[in-house]
Length: 292
Image (cartoon, rainbow, N blue to C red; front, top):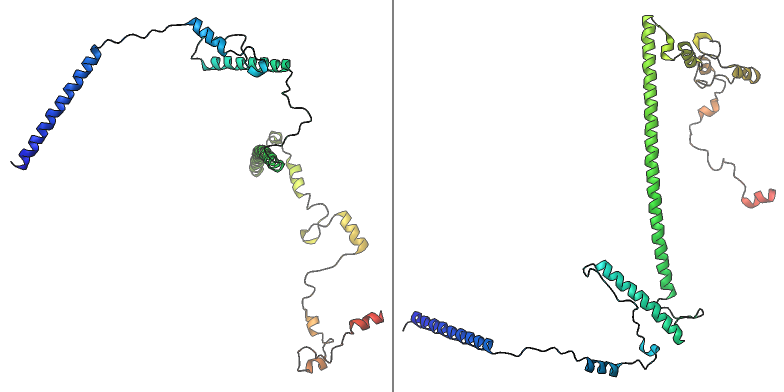
């Protein structure tokens, strides 16, 4: 028998074995389904349950040993799916239980509140709490600084906006004035001024204002303006400072003047600094102090 025939026979045997196993499982399931099982009976033995409840009841003990609190009103939730309504009912019941429990503790005469002069060791150290407090203060200060910086930025933006508007207004006014002046110049050239009131500009006063800085006194020779009356009075009283420009320039007379020329000095061939021997020695500090 070849290898291929041997493998085929093994696969055929495995298939037959699986079919038999499946048939046995189906037969077992059918036999278990045919077996009748008795139905469970639920019996409410109230007497037995009440006896057991009385046996484990602790009504004979004081409330402080039992610490049981019963709500005066049952919880009624119209819609069980309403989480908000349900949690609100639980909160109200817990609040009522806390009030009733506190009253029972007071009736039992058991102290449960901390006295005013009670000092207990804190879980956190004072230095740790100081760091936490400083951190909270820093955070609050940072928030305040951020708000203040935001306000300052807004104020700067508003100020810049106002400044731009003012500059624009000035430019518009300047442009209007320049247009009026240009129109007046054109009419002056053409010789037709028409009605000057249309431009709200006094031509004579405008020209006088521009020339007022230079025409405050009578003109001297060459058309140069003279100083004002106050300056003239001071010049007459204290004198004029004189000419300052070009006073050190050589002239023909100064170049021909040889009065300051020294033959002895110019015959010397050594133009270096004088020797130490020829220098006048300064007296020492002690000698200077004695002379004083």
